[in-house]
Length: 499
Image (cartoon, rainbow, N blue to C red; front, top):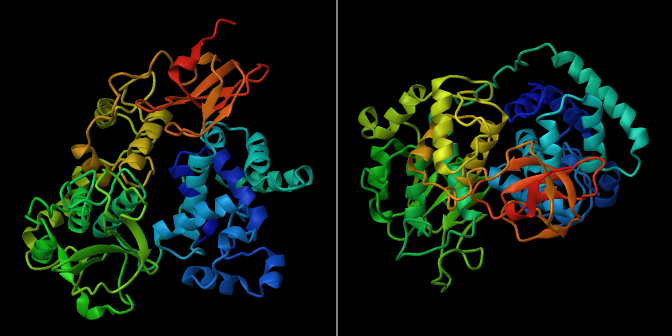
């Protein structure tokens, strides 16, 4: 399977225009020639390692200087230490090698969406191939020599666009042995939910208040699996002592005999590790686990140290069971979990471009939960605003933020509660695209951040809205205006433009 085809399809799935996808691909082509193992040539000599040796050394932990060695690596050839920290953290959450091209593809999309929102806005709305190629070169890749690089990258972008411009989709052959939808999707969902909890310090460890937002080891695993559509909590799982029997009745199989408990060999992503008397965790792949481990003496809600709920290297607690969701087991034929997997088709799959009553129902639910679907409201048309709202919901509820509504998102929405402040800010005075006067002096890096830059006042445009956020409007300066704003701002700092 072509990495280029995979990359293109993922970009389109996440909402990029064809031009946005092709201009992004042009950067990858120039930077790494689509080699996900590619280590900047001068560092092969400097570090005395081949590309493969470098990847293996970082994966194993033998090489500890990945984030600070300034060595360009991977499809996007990232060098800056902060971006390499993001990349390494993303790979660990993904449970993969740093050389995995699928992980790197999703990382590029994640980084552009979360860390370069102004670029992302253009990649998902603009059809100007040349301008997008320059924007990515200038503000994302940012090489020392830009002018000489531009023509080559633009030619790559034109070549890619010539292939896809008249195609409805670019078809890729499924990989041999790739898992079908169903149990594999459910396993990935509860693993991602567990990782999201571990990475959100509003969740800490507690045995007294253990069913959210704080958890102990068993309540976290039970909650994550339940949220993915396997009703283990409903079936009676409450603590480590009764998890094994209940999980097996809900489609899990005991695979302990095929695993090496001392080393973790034979374990797969999503396996539930169990010590019936004391502890449980989820294996996330690549020699890592995620678990709620200890309050460390803290009684305050939330994770006060960042270590109460965390990912870490595999170790044998000791475990006495490894449980794997297979959709088979003691009572698989009547298992509610298996029925949920088999009934996935009863939930419509909706994505950008979908229309009709199901889309309208989804939009109404998003609005009810506090997510802005745009000025047209619940109009039954799944466009950019609905896609952005759905991605925000998914990201904030531990799901893959792919903008596609399916069984996992449906299950999360069933148990979700409206965001704090949703009834106070319902889009406010402005909509996406409103021309405003920025009258404040601070713009924030994210909608919930306390980190800000000082900006000058003047004419600006609203590009995104996040209801209920501390700083609900994302605004950018307009050409010819005096403002330098480019970030998230408070509602009271923008007003109707009367120029």
